Length: 227
Image (cartoon, rainbow, N blue to C red; front, side, top):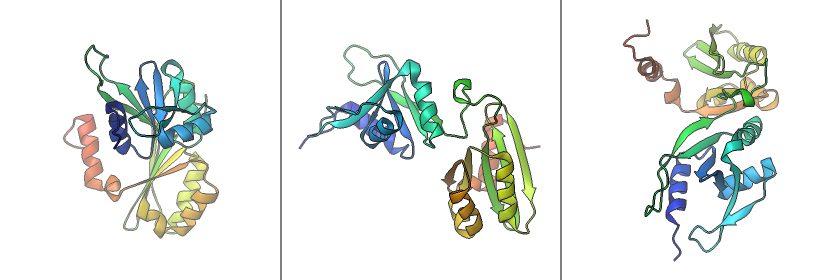
């Protein structure tokens, strides 16, 4: 039975941790994509789809882009609503070593773009999040490229209408929302499906847990209190 090559096993291990992203896998002077990612990228970017010997009976579908011009390709994928995980070589190739260490250095989503070359000048690139706790509805918008951040507590009466009003006002490129919330708010779900121009990213309940998120803030800023 054929076995995967060491590099392809490494690729699949990293891909398994980033299943919702197109993986840009650094190989020398190129970022290469394989299997379904390669098929998607070749279609979205008009790239030639080739194949690579990977140890299996069939060649793995493959396409690639030069590392020095990758931003233009990433920008096109992100503009189409895709997430891109950039995997770099963490050490130089050395004689006698068949496999270099690789790791994810950045995940780029529509709402987390900060590169000037990938942004529309004069237009905010907002990332938004919605949190519902009991009768309270919180919503925030942040532009990672400028540092702007706006947050508000919305009235409990007709929260779906208030949320859609804010989304229309700020027009975020990406919205983070707890998966179960969409099932509880059919009007919001319908709006997101039919009228929302951004990308909806569903997150787990833990991502919106107060204690969990507060600890993330404390750790990031290396402080002991949010005060």
